[in-house]
Image (cartoon, rainbow, N blue to C red; front, side, top):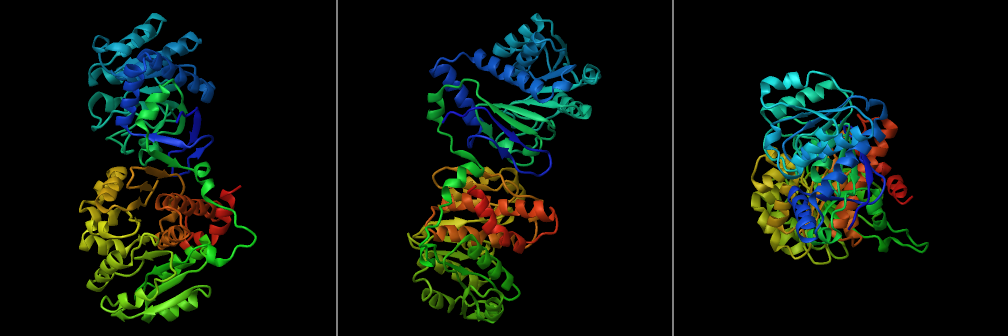
Length: 540
């Protein structure tokens, strides 16, 4: 599990992170602390050697990335080990002939352990430190504009709102508008959630140690970290094995193995047959978008079941689609009669997609209950999306634990909030924890959609997606994702892999469309039409 140095690019605007080497493993703050502890206490790696390598890596990255700005470097240091890393970086830069000064947010007498040692060595090589103990002298201490800043205020342990002197220091550092290199993570960003804790450094470059953190790749924190550089500083390999981190950042290299070339003698019976149960009065488009996405993803056959009142519209909208009209009531599925009709359609179907456009009524709740109890089978996974999720929320998400086969849920934050009985804001504050909780309550594999979508498996895997852009904020994008993932499930891909590849491909196709058409104004149909070319490009 050792991870070599790697460079990840990001801007503060929405963009893709471009990974240049191995898959990015993600740690949370607890795992980071345990990696430190095990490396030092169990495997005998001196803590100061780790700090030295970390600080020197920051110094090297600053000079390499911003050579023209390294003339008057300011280290803004906190009282903990993150500040110690900053002092090591400053000491190394002075030894290499650069002009460096530091502001310590506190008293030198209060520094302990490795941080105190790093401070002393910085002073011993000629580094000047201003102690800014009170808010009143902070503005004076930071009054001279530098040409570059090393942000060493907070590390990965921050879990409270930034206030007082540190907050003012962050505001002043940001006002300099000079290249800023963050030590481990931009100060003010929660390393587990990506939340900005009141205020955060807007870094140009973040140098982190050993592994990336969830906050580096989760918005809004991802927008504060700038370019992310992951460097190896000598953590014990066995410590990494003991932690066995389950977090991953989804990028192209990690997913290519899931796309298989088709043999020359391929036939449609080899590539899955999803049953898409969707639509209602005024929502025929949901059926068409999910079904077209399934076809464009490469399903061998696709059958769509919808209320009979909209069947002519759907049948006319996609010639390659098989359609089945189901008894309806007031424009939606008739909960009393639909199960019997759908039961006749299940034979030969390798996956079920249900939910887009079906509405929420007593009838649809009854339909969802029947699908969970009677239609789910070990060899026939079921994806529930959109109104199907709202129906699950109404009957209780724990009901999903009674399903006989694999279940996949693809909520946006609003739907996730209804499933968990919390506010949407709470979901967005920590989507990783929300995805984990939803998985625990339902036994399902879960995708919470949005910027940097989160995938969680019942086994504890957490994936963060790298693709997508703001142009996807248009109707029908979720329906398209349902069809994409439904096809991959129908092709016997395990749920975690189907969600990982599906959400990446969904965003990747959108990025290709945006590059060609512009980032605003393209629609779900444009993304769907791009899917074959996007899939092909992923194999190159």
